[in-house]
Length: 137
Image (cartoon, rainbow, N blue to C red; front, side, top):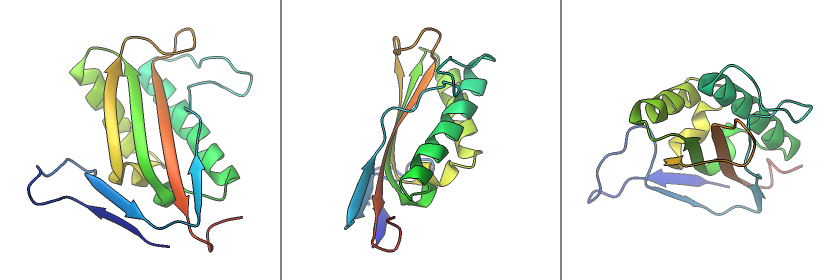
């Protein structure tokens, strides 16, 4: 399987991600939105960046359970409950400094939203991965 990530010349050069991701997978993996919940289902304490760290840990666990890793991710959507561009940037920076960083080199969207589903939830990550026969379990 191959994953081709490109930026068409007529579009602006994005900071770290690509406008287009093309793949010919034999298996697609769609994760439910990964939330900042601990193993007991409680929203983690510590504010926005602690929640990002929990989302990263949960996403890595979910990907691994499907035989996938950050390099197999072909699309991410990051939702942050904020109207602050600084907070959006802080989330992007934290994600790109994490063990999941390679996942954000693909087609990615970062957006501020009004509210998320769990009490106190500030961030959620939607991930799609594509696996070839060598990566599938």
